[in-house]
Image (cartoon, rainbow, N blue to C red):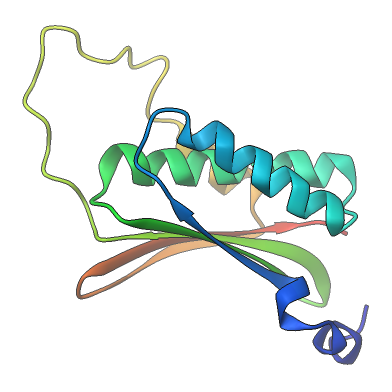
Length: 142
C-alpha cells in the first residue's frame, strides 16, 4: 500500500477511539471491541493477536497505575512504508502509590507488560504533557 492509497482510506476506517472504564472486566471488554475492529481491518491473525496483547498490556497499565479517565486510540498507520497498527493509551498521569499491604503482588506475575510491548512493537514510547500521559506502540501487520 502506498502512502497515497493509505491516505485515500477514510479517517473513520483508519482510527477508532475507546473510552476506558475503570471497572472490573474492562480489559476483556476492550479486547472484544478491538478484536472486532481488527477483524474489519482484515489483519493477519498473528498480527491481530500481537496487537491485542499490546492493547491488553497498555490498557491494564493505565487502569492499574494511572488516574482516570483513560482512552484507547487505535489506528492504522505506515511505519517505514509498512502497514502497522498504532495503539495509544492516554490517562491523567500516575496514580498515587497504594499503601503497602501484607499481600504484595507476586513479582513473577507482574511487571513484564512494557517488556512485552517492546518485544512486539516496531516502535514504542511515551509522551507526557501537563495533565496527560500517553504510552504508544506501533505493531507491524504486513
